[in-house]
Image (tube, rainbow, N blue to C red; front, side, top):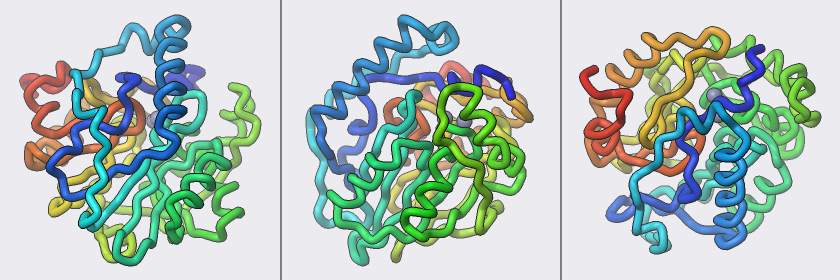
Length: 288
Ligand SMILES: [Zn+2]
Ligand SMILES: [Zn+2]
């Protein structure tokens, strides 16, 4: 596997997660917020200093002054917290239906104790583990979490099986010794629905970053969880095994850009953004 897989991400910003959520009918909640911000900040500095791939691809995100406003809408049907995991600070996303408190853990790449702590602090009932794609920073901890909580792994699309089957090797190669291979209990396909309590997400198959990447969209809540397909100011890499740039652009153009401007998306790394913001200013999407 490409040794750059551990640097698969662009667009990291210290202002992770708590942005662009004003006026939306879902809520982000903060856990250990100061600690969280500090670790993100330190990682951003580390990347700029030591990671030429990230540095060369880096596009600073727009300013998000609302980062200082803690959003906590008690009437929202869905709540979420983001737990940055692995040295790549992947946005593991814990989302839950506020009516039932049933939760999905999306992309538990590693740092399982932190994810378990978030589950404990929020008091949610974990229902399923969900994967956007098979890269190690997203799926490396799925087997351990499955074992710990006795949950099924849902997604990604079956075309990422080859990645899930090589997680341990990939991890060993890069010093992530607790990564384990896994498989899915339920592969996802275009048109499928992911249920989290009483909240449903449509499944969009968006190959290009990896062949089995999927995106979760709820048009009423106006929230998408996009993995590494699209970032604030950037797009996913397509030079990793079985990646394809043209396919990635087509996935974004055909499946994500048709979403409404005010759909906020959580990406695998870095700050959230909106479809409208990226349509207007993402340098990779101009003229597509
Ligand atoms: Zn990835
Ligand atoms: Zn990633």
